[in-house]
Amino acid sequence: MSNEVLDAVRALLPKIAERARSTDEDRRVPAESIRELVRAGVFRMLQPKRYGGAESDPVSFYEVIREISAVCGSTGWTAAVLGVHPWQLALFDEAAQDEVWGSDPDALISSSYAPVGRLVPAEGGYRLSGRWRFSSGCEHAVWAMVGGLVLGDQGRPVDVMTVLVPRSDYSIADVWDVIGLRGTGSNDIIVEDAFVPAHRVMRNHDMAQLRGPGQEVNTGPLFRIPFGTVFTTTITAPVIGMAVGCYRSYVTAMRDRVRLSLGGGRFAEDQFAQVAVARAASEIDAAILQTDRNVWETYEHAVRGEAIPVELRLRVRRDQVRATERALEAIDILFKTAGGNSLSRGNPIERAWRDAHAGSVHVANDVERALAMYGKGEFGLAVEDNLI
Image (cartoon, rainbow, N blue to C red; front, top):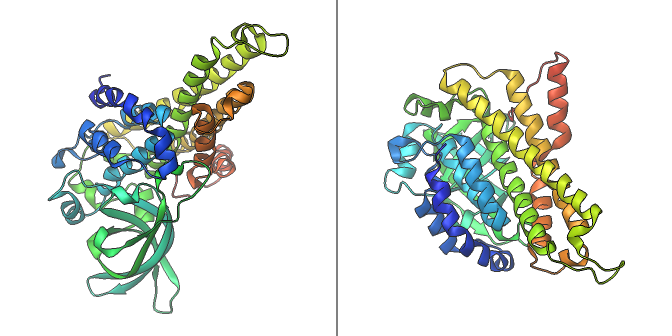
């Protein structure tokens, strides 16, 4: 399967790798890296063809994200999150799509989905206020998707929405100073009583049920697969990529290493080191193979115009969270056996360890919740969740 964007991105990887340390220290992906990824077509992969997008299959997108994440976790994470939003915007009303892409098809969108915003009905739409955390790459975006609760007559929540707001309607608070994924610039977004027209609001329940007004104009199979599949795999793909990068760095660094203690000798000749490499490689392979298989199977159902079986949707979530666990297991094995070589600040192994563990705490990687849903389904119990 041809992936022209992947070929273009591979040519950029050496420079992105060179910037990885400064990305981490500066707490943001350099604008130069974002411009390069824009030119390479990364953010057009999941965009509708009617706006000049590639409308690629999602597996190709995840492959690109893994490769970027292998050299810089923060850049890969940011590319993943900014890159998935064109897919979601394609589900919104056509008027919303025209607002964003009509004058700038390369416009970037960040997000923060926690429903902490307050939507008060107003003529023609809503009034929105709130403060949202963890909006990765927001400084590079000119729009944001945020979560909000619709308040009824008595001020009680009556619905949960995703709301599209332009950069002119929100401010950014620079608060991102964390252990891992430091370069994602996942700062806070603040909206103070902004008007949101009705066409820029979409019910989360409708999205989970594969219903979106944008499907009337974007009729391709890409836009007939569940949010719970596309978005959660978007969160896991960079974590897997970080494990891939950690593995490559480990093998390169340790291949010619000579022990100065424990009897000396070449590290590569140590059976325990050989076993560690085998275990890590197997975990990474399993993570990639399962997630790619499940997403591809989902996409093929959409291509054939078939409903996505609940059993498949639950399996996607099961293997997605397990893929994150497997990636962490691989990194932990390598980090531990690398010894003191993995401790220096800025070391690719150390950075991958921090970044992957940071990515694992995202709500999409709530392992017990996802596995319990799968178990309920297997036992014939009803499963209701917007992330399946």
